[in-house]
Image (cartoon, rainbow, N blue to C red; front, side):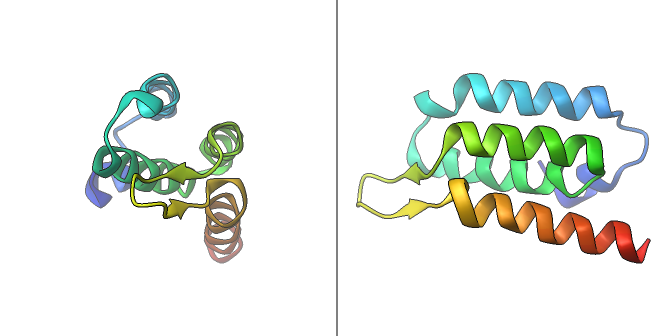
Length: 95
């Protein structure tokens, strides 16, 4: 999912909610690089508006950290959800 897609106002919340749902259903089965991409897409979707932010945070908390085979992780349970919250809150306050 590109930045242009996330910012395209022709795409509806339902489109992005479908993306969030697909990420939730498939992320555990994907390889590391795909999970990282899905995590990035989830964070971007969460920045679009409050409704999508809530859906993205709910899923991020359910997913928890995305563990890699090398032992590293993308900490969705704390930092990732916090990034979605802080970025979205700043955007809504400014816009």
